[in-house]
Image (cartoon, rainbow, N blue to C red; front, side):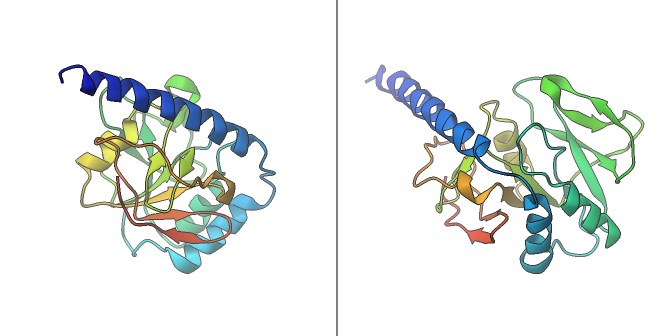
Amino acid sequence: MSDSAPRCDVLLGELKAEARRVALARRAAVDPAGKGEALAAIVLRDCLPPPGAVVSAYWPMGPEMDVRPLLDALHARGQPLCLPLTPRRGSPLRFRRWAPGDPLGHGPMGTREPLPEAPEVAPDWLFVPLLAFDRAGRRLGYGGGYYDRTLAALAQAAAVGVAYAAQEMQEVPAGPTDIGLPRVATETGVVICGGGS
């Protein structure tokens, strides 16, 4: 009996590794042209954060969905924005205020983040990057667990996944510490999820 939990953890890890391989290949096949602008238009129409809510997104790396058009549009509406700081492994993300045009420094693993003089804030609304999602709201990240810990710590904040429509899977492997999402915004629409974990 004591061996069952470690075996389950190993199996879940293998399932997630295979799902990440498939998700990365799907994302690599997407032509990103115009998709960031389409995402921004859909969020502004169907999933707009309330006025005054501090909104977090992310600075896109490589082939991730480009949320910069969305950030520009939210900033133009007067929305306060912030970007995450990647902490040491095992910790939740922290956030600093940011606006389009503000300089960014280099964070770990190729991330970009606001400079140390920018004030730290707690977001009310998070746009969460992901590699894959399903209709139950399960998300697959890069494996560090940063957003799971962050969403658990910011339980009162609204969270919306951000992905290309092609990143949807039939079922994303998930464990008990994986936090589900109620919605995922793509370039084709907002998917209302079951929110399951």
